[in-house]
Length: 87
Image 1 (cartoon, helix red, strand yellow):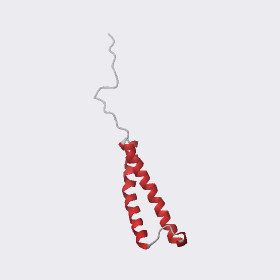
Image 2: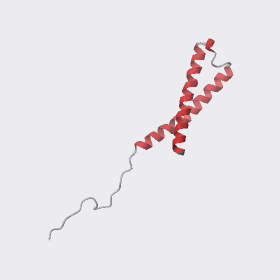
Image 3: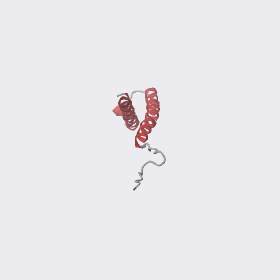
Image 4: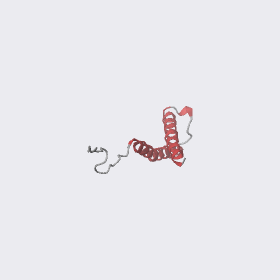
Protein backbone atom coordinates (compact mmCIF):
# COMPACT_ATOMS: atom_id res chain seq x y z
CA UNK A 1 0.00 0.00 0.00
CA UNK A 2 2.91 2.33 0.67
CA UNK A 3 4.11 1.96 -2.91
CA UNK A 4 0.67 2.89 -4.24
CA UNK A 5 0.55 5.88 -1.92
CA UNK A 6 3.95 7.11 -3.08
CA UNK A 7 3.04 6.69 -6.73
CA UNK A 8 -0.23 8.53 -6.17
CA UNK A 9 1.58 11.35 -4.37
CA UNK A 10 4.17 11.65 -7.15
CA UNK A 11 1.53 11.87 -9.83
CA UNK A 12 -0.51 14.29 -7.74
CA UNK A 13 2.54 16.57 -7.33
CA UNK A 14 3.17 16.48 -11.08
CA UNK A 15 -0.47 17.28 -11.82
CA UNK A 16 -0.68 20.18 -9.34
CA UNK A 17 2.67 21.60 -10.51
CA UNK A 18 1.47 21.58 -14.09
CA UNK A 19 -1.76 23.31 -13.03
CA UNK A 20 0.12 26.05 -11.20
CA UNK A 21 2.54 26.57 -14.09
CA UNK A 22 -0.47 27.05 -16.38
CA UNK A 23 -2.00 29.47 -13.86
CA UNK A 24 1.32 31.36 -13.74
CA UNK A 25 1.48 31.65 -17.52
CA UNK A 26 -2.15 32.71 -17.83
CA UNK A 27 -1.61 35.34 -15.14
CA UNK A 28 1.43 36.68 -16.99
CA UNK A 29 -0.50 36.94 -20.27
CA UNK A 30 -3.78 38.21 -18.81
CA UNK A 31 -3.34 39.91 -15.42
CA UNK A 32 -7.06 40.73 -15.31
CA UNK A 33 -7.74 37.08 -14.49
CA UNK A 34 -5.87 37.72 -11.21
CA UNK A 35 -4.96 34.11 -10.41
CA UNK A 36 -1.94 35.22 -8.41
CA UNK A 37 -1.75 38.58 -6.61
CA UNK A 38 1.84 39.84 -6.38
CA UNK A 39 5.25 39.28 -7.98
CA UNK A 40 6.83 37.68 -4.93
CA UNK A 41 4.10 35.05 -4.75
CA UNK A 42 4.43 34.39 -8.47
CA UNK A 43 8.19 33.85 -8.19
CA UNK A 44 7.99 31.64 -5.12
CA UNK A 45 5.16 29.60 -6.61
CA UNK A 46 7.08 29.05 -9.83
CA UNK A 47 10.21 27.96 -7.92
CA UNK A 48 8.13 25.62 -5.76
CA UNK A 49 6.45 24.04 -8.76
CA UNK A 50 9.69 23.52 -10.66
CA UNK A 51 11.43 22.05 -7.61
CA UNK A 52 8.60 19.68 -6.73
CA UNK A 53 8.16 18.62 -10.34
CA UNK A 54 11.87 18.04 -10.82
CA UNK A 55 11.87 15.73 -7.79
CA UNK A 56 8.66 13.86 -8.55
CA UNK A 57 9.13 13.24 -12.28
CA UNK A 58 12.40 11.23 -12.06
CA UNK A 59 10.93 9.10 -9.28
CA UNK A 60 7.84 8.34 -11.33
CA UNK A 61 9.93 7.51 -14.40
CA UNK A 62 12.26 5.32 -12.33
CA UNK A 63 9.27 3.38 -11.04
CA UNK A 64 7.96 2.97 -14.60
CA UNK A 65 11.27 1.63 -15.94
CA UNK A 66 11.69 -0.76 -12.99
CA UNK A 67 8.36 -2.34 -13.88
CA UNK A 68 9.51 -2.99 -17.46
CA UNK A 69 12.57 -4.98 -16.44
CA UNK A 70 11.88 -8.69 -16.30
CA UNK A 71 14.27 -10.62 -14.10
CA UNK A 72 16.13 -13.26 -16.03
CA UNK A 73 16.15 -16.71 -14.56
CA UNK A 74 19.53 -18.32 -14.28
CA UNK A 75 19.45 -22.02 -14.96
CA UNK A 76 21.99 -24.37 -13.51
CA UNK A 77 24.29 -25.84 -16.10
CA UNK A 78 22.79 -28.87 -17.78
CA UNK A 79 19.24 -28.03 -16.75
CA UNK A 80 16.50 -27.65 -19.27
CA UNK A 81 16.97 -30.76 -21.38
CA UNK A 82 16.58 -34.18 -20.00
CA UNK A 83 18.40 -37.01 -21.71
CA UNK A 84 16.67 -40.30 -21.96
CA UNK A 85 18.84 -43.34 -21.88
CA UNK A 86 17.48 -46.31 -23.73
CA UNK A 87 18.56 -49.58 -22.37
